[in-house]
Length: 174
Image (tube, rainbow, N blue to C red; front, side, top):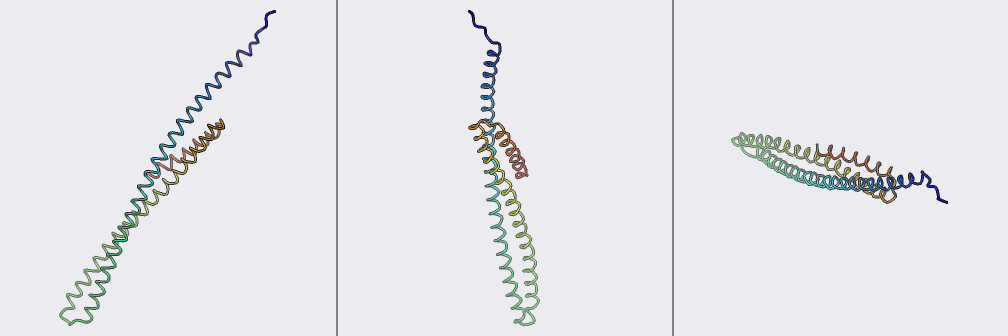
């Protein structure tokens, strides 16, 4: 007696093959998206480091300007002291020197404040980009876990974190 082939067996085999094939596509997509996450994490890290360095450089420049400002203040104080001690004939020259130091101090102070502002701006970019790196690193870890556990919702969560990281990346560059 010939055994009857159940039509659903063939269908079941076909479904299994398709499921296995789709799993391979999903694995490939997960691996490629994780690679992109790693690329953006590396770029964000590079830019975060750049902004951190620039913030430090600007702060050093601001500190130099403040030291220069103080030096001019000391010179002004000495000139004021000299004006009180010297004879009346030197008072005009002393007053001119004091005014010169005050004018120079104003320019130096303005420059120092500009460097401080620039430093703060770079520091703000650094913080945003550092957060971006963290988001990408977490997304990479979750993506790897999703591959190991075959849980697609974890991969989708990793993609969502990457989208937030990408938004921060763009925000950090602007």
